[in-house]
Length: 128
Image (tube, rainbow, N blue to C red; front, side, top):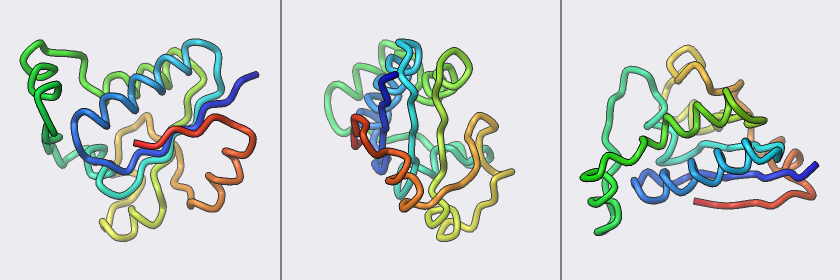
């Protein structure tokens, strides 16, 4: 089986969208898919914190205008329809002061970077 690992640290719309697209396509294509959410990406997955990801450029603006499926929807579908597991970074959770119950339900248990890197061994790794 192929394994795809996605590290998401950016909070920009285009990068979050591309990370979600890679995740969903890999997961529904039969790849074991692991996602590590940290830094500026993690706040977008706090249930009560409805923040908008800022567009970096014209493509982000066009995606909003044309109502492209939201990145969070694509991540959730990857978990529901494919073999994707999405892990919030335990250090980022500590810094943000959030608990697992504060995050979107489709996210897995918090994990550290050391464990994620060990799990990512011998896989494709994408970083956004």
